[in-house]
Amino acid sequence: MSRIVKCGLIQTSMACAAEESIAIIREANINKTLSLIERAAAEGVQILCMQEIFTGPYFCAEQSPRWYESTERIPDGPTVKLMQELARRHRMVIVVPIYEEDGAGIYYNTAAVVDADGSYLGKYRKHHIPHCLPGFFEKFYFRPGNLGYPVFETAYAKVGVYICYDRHFPEGARALGLNGAEIVFNPSATVAGLSEYLWKLEQPAHAVANAYFVGAINRVGTEAPWNIGEFYGQSYFCDPRGQFLAVGSRDRDELITAELDFDQIREVRNIWQFYRDRRPDSYGALVAP
Image (cartoon, rainbow, N blue to C red; front, side):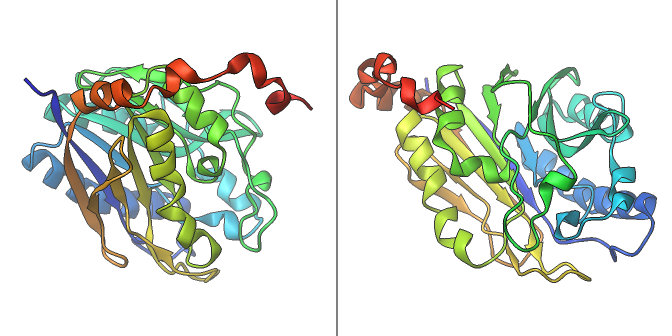
């Protein structure tokens, strides 16, 4: 019998003006997402992921210490606690991408993973931090991740997370595969332009090279007052052959779902023996300074 798991992605636009207080922004964005979580539960979604830092705007378009106030502790902050309650109620695994405080002045771009019984399994911290493009000043806000590339054994599948800019680096994608990931979620915030072509190229390539499923999530709309470009949505699932299973719209708040057959991973790996034929003994130069 096939091991089929229904998975979901949530893409949204900003729920209120960025000039509002941090508390109002968080509440508005969470409330918008909650309605889509309830829809996911009604549709039988078993694993769900939201977009990068889903509780607020993509504030990295500016460099302002104001946004440090939007950090939360993991797992003791209010958003993860709320998601634990929802996960328990709906028997749903939830990947929770938020801005994390690990201590005063020590902040990370992080995704917590909550199991279907509401238990907190752990977190992934974004490794690759951009600071070279107009409107993407992330080094002002985030330290590079320091927890490796964990894979979380959930009730339904082995889940890995790779966040936004990480997707341009195949090394971590391979590490997640070696660590046993069956699906890798990539919560993102990316705008039209150079990255749009790569959006549907790189992650299916990771899926093929590592023979796992990928769920890629992007926000939608244009966020004032920065207006750095259009967040073009098009969240999607692809399978270990790199084939698209479901693709979201460009400009709507949306729940994207797909039924993933995780037995397909073994089938594909038995055909394409990339894990057998890889040569780690010859790759030393890849990690040289």
